[in-house]
Structure formats: structure tokens, C-alpha cells
Length: 286
Picture 1 (cartoon, rainbow, N blue to C red):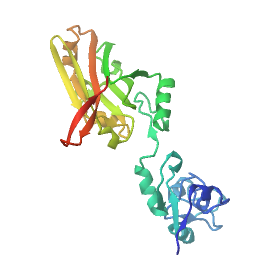
Picture 2 (picture 1 turned 90 degrees about the vertical axis):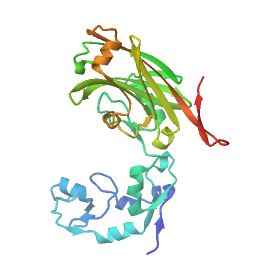
Picture 3 (picture 1 turned 180 degrees about the horizontal axis):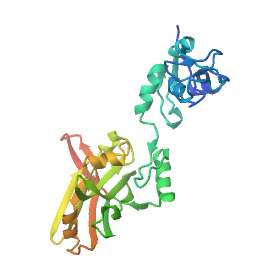
Picture 4 (picture 1 turned 30 degrees about the vertical axis):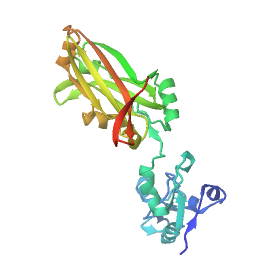
């Protein structure tokens, strides 16, 4: 059977089109084998078949275990654009390869990196930056160096030592600085780390350093920012950042165990490849 290629223009010009026939009427996602149908020919995906308790959502007849093999064969013959074509993805795939690509498509939207709540907002980077500023009231800074002071009362109560998020704009990119308290096993700790608002491949082009100290002592960390494709909890639980034990944090605070006072400084730089020497040299912003 010859392949049928449906580009974005063609898809929108086919009412009702083949791709609409492959849309599940319950979840509206594209259907993949096994595609089920009722005795009257109404179709739905296998996931929704269990959700509707084996009743056709269109005619309410019992679904049974009838496969719509004809529609599955039609799907095999199709080549469709990635569903993120409107965000810039130029790729076209056989129908059954399309789903695998979309899971990892570099044009897919990003999840909101705000860690203080289960925010369901998704979008591109400019949209998320505006969302963080306007909806979450996150502090925004321009420049690749930072000097932040965190003051928390009752530091012995980890739950009371809330986390903080700051967004930095430098090198034409956005970065999220996280600082929070949590339980690492049985030990309460404070942790700071940086995330890059973009894909992992771009994140590897940058490095950052963090430093915290007081009373003539200091701790420092240097690493590569993680992409916001990795959720906040995944980065935190991998310990990929500057971790400060609570007793050390209190020592840095000046010995007053009634209040935590930490100053976190750091900088972000871009690694540039030296074409002659074949080595990376840091590009520091002014």
C-alpha cells in the first residue's frame, strides 16, 4: 500500500480527514493498535476502553473485543508531521513512529520549573519566563553573577525553611537558581543548584559555580546546569548541586541557632571551543 503524506496544510483541508478518524473521541489523542470498535463501528483507543467500562461512548452499546483492523491498516500507510510542527518541528514520520519521536522531540513544550506547587502550565521558554514573573512572582535578574542572602527563622524546622527560586538572564538564555531545605535521609540539609531553561544539549554549553560561607569558612560547587526537562525533584534527589548540612549552615550564619543567614554567591559562564587548541575556554559575561 502506498504511503500518504499529510502535511499541516493538507490535514486542515480534509473535513473529515483521515487523521480525524484516528482521533479517539474520548481523550482526543491519536489511536494506536489495538484500536477498538463497537458493533456499530464507533472506535476508541485501548486506554479509554477501560475508562468507559467497556461501553461505547457514542452509542452506549457494549464494546466487546472487536479490533478495527481496517483503520489500523490505514494508519500504517500514513506519514504525518510531528504534532509540534506549529512550534517549529519540521519532521514527518510514519504514523507508528510518530509517537516515539514526539516523546523526545526537542520542540515539545517545557513544563513550568516552579517547584513550590504542582503547576501544570506548559509552553515555550518565553511563555514560561512571563508565567514565572507574572503568576509565580519570581525574582528576575539580568547578568551572570549573583549574590543572594537567605534568611530563615526557626532553622531547626526543615518544613519552615522554604525553598526559593530566582531566574537569571545572561548569554541570551534563562537560568533558574533553586535554594531549598529538605531531608536527606535523616539529616536536614540545604541545597542550591542551577537549571537551564532549554534542552540538555544546550545546557552542556554552560557551567556555573556556587559558593556559601561565613566565619572564615566556605563551601564551593562547580558544575553544568541541568535542563528543566529534568524535573526539580529529579535534580535534587540526584544531589547534583551544592549541599550544606544544617549544622554547617548554622555555623556559617554566625552561631545564632535561632536564625539562618546564608549568603550564596556564584556565576555562570559559557564554554567556548578554541578551534586551534581544541580546548574549551570560559567566556565570562561583563
